[in-house]
Length: 263
Image (tube, rainbow, N blue to C red; front, side, top):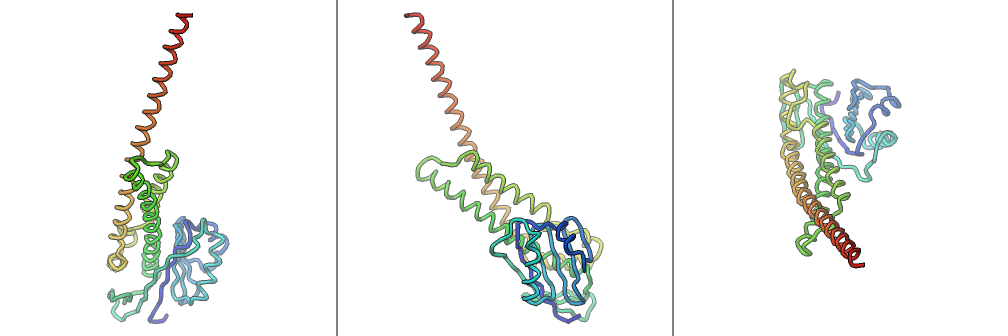
């Protein structure tokens, strides 16, 4: 094992079908679950794949990574045209309990599959947060356009169907984060090992996972507040329309009764 390892993570799709990929590529698989796959290609090269669309490479050259990304395309659901990425360099130290972070380099005294997976998991979460932040900002930008119309014209042209689509995107983003990312809680393996727990805390701080998560959460809450106003407006508009329909029907009924009595 080299004393330096470069990790690179990509968010390549909305989802990766890990079950399908495992069937297509069973060789070199070390651990698996319904959400993740962890491969050791040889003594220095590792790959970590997670179902929410992220993949992390360790100790691999750029040509190797490009070839591997091609293999993942067959199992990618709604692949991205431009993948977000993040990286981290690891130095293997001499003290067994060492965990020292400086700039974009992390020095570790212990290296095994559990440590390696912990690093790769946090890198995967980092690129996933970049993806979710971009998604939440895109939703917010669309909502702002309707808010501008409300300010300028005193009304908003947001249909019930479009509002429900925004609500679906917002809830789906929040649910995906809650189901897949260990942002506010430590993963189970960290509770059982002090070194892994320290490593988890260090990586969470380094990648600023908590403030980035809260920024996304706040953005989605702003979207939800705006949608609540729009839904209330649509409901009021629909109620007013029904009231006018009822009034018109009553008038027609009265006129018909009046006409029948006259003629």
